Amino acid sequence: MPPIDEILLRAQRHATQFLDSLDTGPVGATATIAQLRGRLDLPVADRGVNAIEVIDELVAATQGGHLGSAGGRFFAWVIGGALPSALAADWLVSTWDNNAAMAACAPAAAVVEEIAGRWVKEILGLPRSASFAFTTGCQMAHTTCLAAARHALLRDRGWNVEVDGLSGAPPVRVLATEQHHGSVTRALRILGLGSRCLEPLATDATSRLTAATLREALRRSAAPTIVVLDAGDLNVGAFDPFAELVPLAKAAGAWVHVDGAFGLWARASPQYRHMAAGIEAADSWATDAHKWLNTPKDIGIAVVADAQAHKAAMAIDASYLSSTGEARDPMDWTPDWTRRARGFPVYAALRELGRDGLAGLIDRCCEHAGALAAGLAALPGVELVARPVLNQGLVRFLDERAQANQRDHDERTDRMIDAINREGTAFFSGTTWMGRRAMRISVVNWRTTARDIERTIGAVAGLLGSAGVRP
Ligand SMILES: *Cc1c(COP(=O)(O)O)cnc(C)c1O
Image (tube, rainbow, N blue to C red):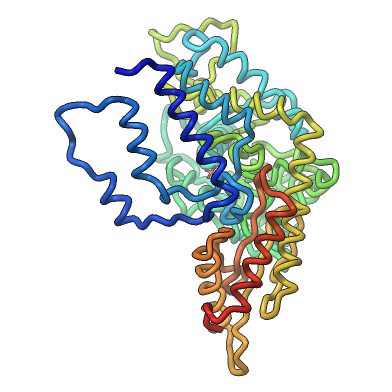
């Protein structure tokens, strides 16, 4: 076996080559699924392979199979990049390889997580007394927060859901907007509440829930209720009017949960903070470090105002556990047991940026999103569907034939997204918003520059001007 430093240096070389290629190579994948299978699908071998060979071959065989989402011209879905210190810290997390379940088996990880959690609450302006958890993503942050909600709502009605389960319990209902993210519904399924407990509420023309709609929905039933509000919906980055809605929901005895997967980070910017005014009065908040804080993937954050409900829903008490009592045991707050030390990349990212750097990252992404949407909308046959209020926007490509109808515009939009992604300068994804197809613009990476925006607009202009894409 080669010495470990040789293997790690090899990996480092591959890593830097990959990062260096982000600015010049195509953003989309160039290898097909069949090609990737053909290269990777080997029979299970009897004899093992030299570690350097394993790494070299893994890199070679996956060539063209990685999207350039780590780079500056990837605008699809909402997928952040990784800050240098957070990426490096993430490598070290794998190297230290502690099990960050308890302080007893990962003392430094436990302490760093305590501090990173406190910093996050401070930066997002959430209650100091709130509890938190670092989860795999916002999906499990929702699951964690809604487990706490389920506990508290049923506890208040004399039902111990952790002991007695849900059979026979008072039915819980969930109010969320029609635009709610699919991860909310899945959290409800995992928690045994079921997707049918969710009553979708209509939003106004700006994708926001109004006080009148919420008031009416709250009045319809006296069942224990969770209200899910959006801080940055996935299509247009809309923020529900928290200052109005949260007090309404709380007055009706509801638990207010916020999906702020990326949008909650607007709180870190003096320029955008006002959009989430009043959000601190909610009961729980789910967000991601791996989106707008730009840590590597696998880090979501759950914050819960009622720390006791959070712990009651998640903590494990087993005789062989050895809590030191001196430090916070992360697994008391998360749905997982053996776990990655997720605090380190968060700690590193926040130190690298500082308050000013983080605000700058947020502001820059929003500015680039605005410029990209405006630049695309200025091209012939492009319609601005939603001007970014934050870092998300929508445009649509029009079929320029005289008789063209909405279906034709929808198809034209999908064809253009496909053509842009194949061209390789940038990468986008589509959505259906208010019944129409649109191309989403999401800027959520520290690497994106004004030059990236120019290059992207230039590439789309080129496609629109070429005969390559049928009108
Ligand atoms: C990405 C996203 C989620 C899910 O987060 P994961 O980290 O992928 O689990 C939930 N809600 C919104 C609004 C999102 O953008």
